[in-house]
Image (cartoon, rainbow, N blue to C red; front, top):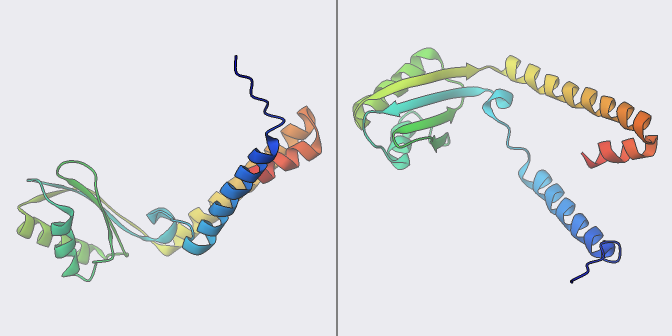
Length: 157
């Protein structure tokens, strides 16, 4: 029977943990967080086309409206989710009309716009939720075990 001693190999696990955390921190500081539209503000169009359409075809139509940097995600055989800068209702309607004309018909399943006030409010609510959750975990772990273990757990999270 093969015996593996975790305690003897702990130094390797320390090194592995340090490497993973360091890679994560480097990625965080170089690329930043990939915030969703709820936190950044913008428009989301959930579209279903009458025929199968390629991502590049959708991008070409969006480029006519200076939306070529929009995130275009295929969500089904004929469905796409498009995340753009904030669009006014009139501009959004023109984009959808152009997509329908050039790509053979489209149905809008969802059309949402999140403004900067709402996105800022959501960001602060998320921060407060993390602070409260961390505090409650710290209290529970302190009661159940020890304070320093609670601090270590919250830091690890």
